[in-house]
Image 1 (cartoon, rainbow, N blue to C red):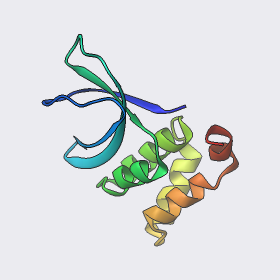
Image 2: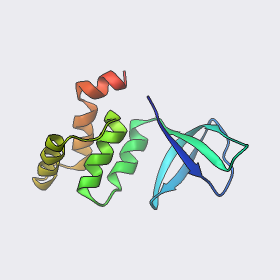
Image 3: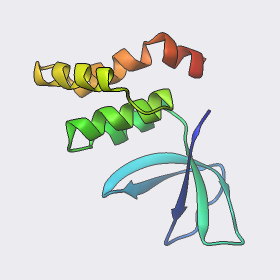
Image 4: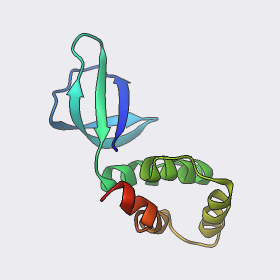
Length: 114
């Protein structure tokens, strides 16, 4: 399953192209997989782990980082136990990249993204 975003864009984008889009003032490169010409909305799909990593690493808040990591990588909300665990890991010096790698190495991730 891919993450689909509906975005109101100030300039047209073409399907099957890559573009950089600002989300909360964070530039994220995304592949445009389709557009709706009848409305000013564009459907954009975040396909790669690298695109997700780029977005996640730019978040300012650790709680938001863990919540977004679970939503983007595991396609579900983070449970309280995992939130506490990963916030502890961050406080102990584990980097955000290492946490993304841990989640991406999990069996749950591998089932969702074969």
